Length: 112
Length: 113
Image (tube, rainbow over all chains, first blue to last red; front, top):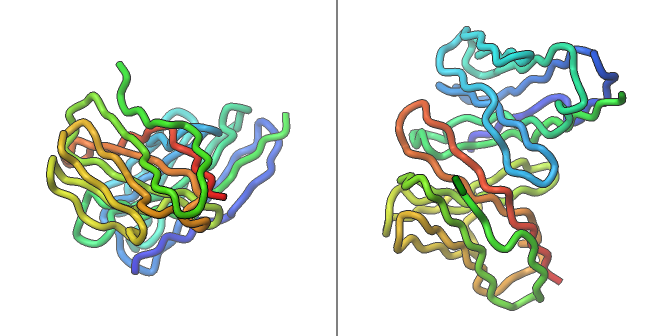
């Protein structure tokens, strides 16, 4: 079945550093979604990508839809303590646009 | 604006017991979903519903039962809980319109002893 592989699984950085993470698949996706999960809460959508090559920003976050349609990247610039959490990529499973498959997540820890 | 709420937030039960997790949304969203979150697996879809009285299996449906008699509620039942079902369970909803995201509840942490 479709699987999404996120890298790295965890990151430990200093406040102010830039962050890069990625998500890859053996299957083509027509939509890429990036969610963030704060401790004790449910995931919240950060950025949605709908077109190959698309580059979309949300404040200090920038995400790109890979041109092969098999990968996506999320960058965070000038990290701050509230960026701590787990970041998930997700995409529609099969032909069902509403059914999502999620990556395993990247856990971000920031040292002040 | 309550949005989507899950109850209980925490539950401890024993193997073999039946337990029901509740999910309620106030947006009149057509679609509702149940996921489980485990270390190393991210979120995996258990069941979903496209509308009242319409449900379908997700990736990991075994051992779970759902119903959707009303649009706003989507309970998840473990008929005979097993230790492997210890997890954090998330409910989500969406309107089903293109480019509309799924909105998640805050989760139920379920421990089965």
